[in-house]
Image (cartoon, rainbow over all chains, first blue to last red; front, side, top):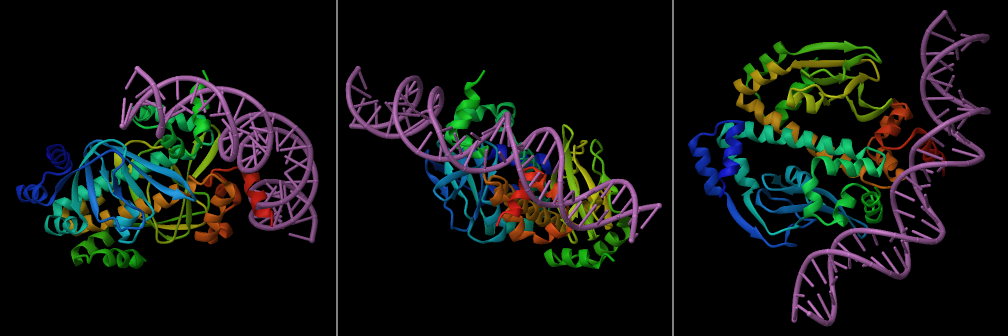
Length: 188
Length: 188
DNA sequence: TCTTTAATTTGATAATTGTCAAATTTATTG
DNA sequence: CAATAAATTTGACAATTATCAAATTAAAGA
């Protein structure tokens, strides 16, 4: 079940067998139904999860409106970055948009792996670096002034999201409202 | 000269003396005058720098307009994240907004330190994590729909930027144009 | 200090996007 | 399959922000 994740880690830096064994031992597989809550705002994020199947959405509340900050799917690691690293409650919610299977590792066990296996720090660093520049690309898109340009970013880079995710979530992710998104899609 | 950087690293994870020695040996101190170019778009970013004194601006060109993506000052690490990690040419320019002194470490030497000293991976990982959630906070701000709200973010969190940086740079950083920023500041 | 350049402000107007209401289409459930 | 709910579209209008031009103020160099 966890094989693709292990393979991915090994592709970054070969893991000693004991580390692989520990990973398999310490990681729990958990299934979530569509609309299940994976993390609630106000709680400390204590886990890193890898998505084995499915798709999740990160959002926070601005007044009464849900602002979507991230969509993540098969292969991605999920956690509430701010809360997980600072050990403070965050304002991010994570919910399953589809039936989703996660491999879950607790913060303390992650720290144990970092301490015990130097090689795991390399993997942790590289994955964090990848997240950093993927986020930079997102920011790049958000700074585009025209709603149309921001929409084209999704069309170009993540067209499958348009099949899998209702437009009302994509609209706040792109920093526009639902009607504006609908009109952009409608014209031409 | 490099003491504050060394202290900061040590506060994350105590470094063996040989690592400190290597760091001091491999790092170059370089001074830049105001408006000097630190990195040009189209080149691969081969260095990580720590700002010992001064302030720099990251920007890219959208048509003919300069879009500012980052301000960084004393204590911060600078590099073009995308280019540095992917080893491909990026579109980011970095220039000094004030006379600036940098401690500079080459990519290859950084990799040497990562390979030679496991402890350095911990430091690299933690710093990358910090950058990641600082960027998340910025993204959070960029998603705010009202220009006024985005401006208040600067007022609240980085008021010194308003003293040190011309408004024309702050305006594109906040995703609005100069006149809009001026009007927001003017009213009340 | 005077001159020149850069930074900031102000005004008039146009373009873009948001808001609210309602209609239509699509999906889901008993 | 009908009934209900959810998703999407459309319309009218208002609010926000951009654009272009010009004036004013502040800063920097001779």
